Length: 94
Length: 94
DNA sequence: TGATATTTATCCCGTACGGTAAATATTTGT
DNA sequence: ACAAATATTTACCGTACGGGATAAATATCA
Image (cartoon, rainbow over all chains, first blue to last red; front, side, top):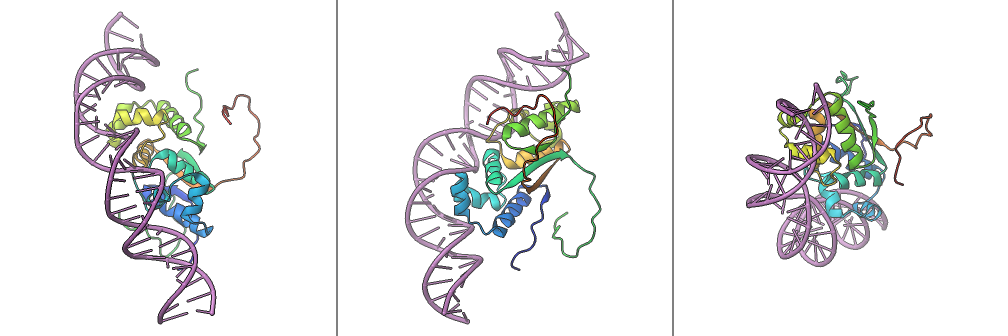
């Protein structure tokens, strides 16, 4: 699989966030080093963050998101919408 | 002023996030201790987080948000929309 | 004012994170 | 497919701080 479509949307965990970020970055063909330079963040941090590090620091996470052109929106949780239809989601664990 | 309306929406900084969270919690008349119990988070952490601690850990931040019934949405940054009109925004620092 | 909520201080263990270089993994060209 | 080029991960080390428990100090509310 080369490039699935990035699934922007609600985040439940650090892992979710990391995966989304990595997908977004890859899609734009940017390297960790590039982001590192643009955002003044270490590649080490970025690497761990994208792999779902729970203990990544908030400030750096926000900076990484901004650097990548991503926006964080907070809103009252919506009542889980059913789901249109797709075959291979990737929900995984309950 | 007792309770302004909580401004859900885009987050730019840890401070923004903390303020939003605190406003949301207050609006629901919940105490730090209550959230602490529900989310298994220390009141110390919650207090610092709501006051904008940049170094708060991502995992705990997400947990706090969930516990408060808030949802995090990530999306490509929208091109800054003009602004309808209001008097006292609170932009502040450049 | 009394009750309730939030902040601060103290003690302390565990680890985030920045360089840097080496080890791996992934991508690309032919 | 294979090798070369490029990207990502991992190991080391040391400094610095996160955050848990708990109690005392403040602040806020009714």
